[in-house]
Image 1 (cartoon, rainbow, N blue to C red):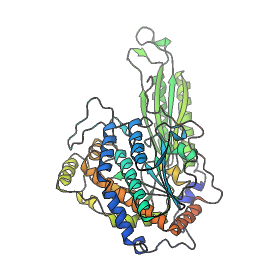
Image 2: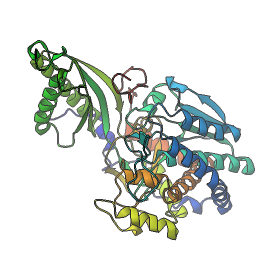
Image 3: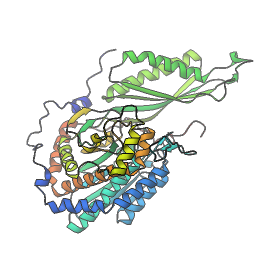
Length: 495
């Protein structure tokens, strides 16, 4: 395979030699420049939201609604914001569960905060340190988005109260962003221009460690391949049938052979979402769901094209028909060091989660259920700051980061060594153990948003860096193309 063509996206990720002339990125911590009473007031304001944050988080954890079906979760967050005086624009970007909540006081910077709230299918689990699936429940918060949404809203509520008391001018925009887990809700919100006019966007994510390091994420395109054949009795006249499942299987074999001949950074994942109903019936329908990832969107597009050729070849070989639906496409994260250093300073001021004896007992018991547990003490420290390290996974926050300066942090909400998208992560997300981490996130987001409102020069630094990393002439074009939001992407065929 020929080497991938040069991509301006990868040039933006090249941190070596990045020169931000005139920027003071290594400035002293912001706390030295601001009145300590502002931070104290904000931290007190978040503490006053503790019960509300916990109640929201536990309700969303219990709802456990998957992407684009988060009706009750979205309504709950909107209700809390509306009661506090935010104006709500619901059903934005053609997504019923997406919303934007705004609170403006005079003129001043516009600071966005992201709030996710979708669950993952197949992970229903009690808030127990023992494996205890919940009968009759289809999903669980294996990525802790119940904590994510509740803490982000709590930060926005505390900021609003501080703005009112201090007379600080500016605007808070809380973005309710559905279907991060593969549905790409933010992609369609970006495409709809909902982040236009925002000066900076803040976000966080549950994790097994505490860090404001600005790591990179992978670009990702996903889609469903639907094979159609001819049904027949598998015993009496199989020669009359053409198996759609054969098409899926031949495609999988072709893609597996291709794995040796793609760049080593490429990741290809797939599941069979429909594979027939009975062994004695030649299936006339089958579906396979694929992800392709790489750091470079150009490589992702190229490899997806080859995967599609494998599908076409499989259809030809099995005398079936195949159609492809592009489900989603997300950019990699564009880091911002100016914002990252500010966020890191605020995280260190707040400190790591403060687990009590009961939390520690829960965490230690849960850790015994892990394949590779690490000491619980690792969750009680803050990792060194860095920028540009390659992280794992993909997120639709990436698209946001290419249209507005964006920064995020990770906070320990489950024991070190816990894998996200696991029953252990679900259990921690529904417990006080995870909720202690959510409070750290709420406080840190609120402090950083307030710092940016008080010191617009920091926003100027972030914007200058943002412009330089993107490069002159950059124009955002969604990797999802012009398709409508895939509101049914969590549906199984026939639902």
